[in-house]
Length: 120
Image (cartoon, rainbow, N blue to C red):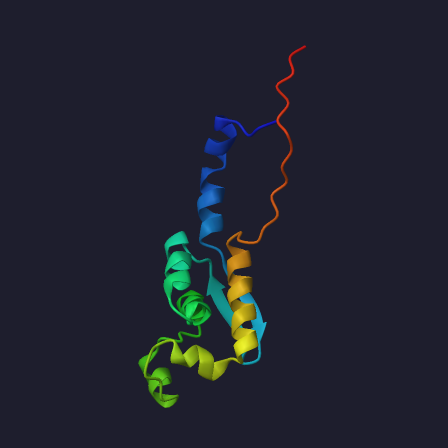
């Protein structure tokens, strides 16, 4: 049976809270905390030529702050996304980006079946 309007209204706060969840991920540099990307952020990452994964990782990691000026300077970064490539191997950066997308429901399997309108 399909979800009702009343059920959706009851779930409003839980749905809003779920969109703000953060996740800890174990990486080669230690545990990082990431937020879910917005749809706009995902589109921007796809539009970033050759740097989509680095863009997504940079903008979704909330701790440590990879945009910190002292950190960027210490690693000799020219572009903000340079820090992502300097900290993570290319394959790990891609796996982190995929895990971030997974947190936001991308790559999630959606069960579907033919709707039955049969009336008794």
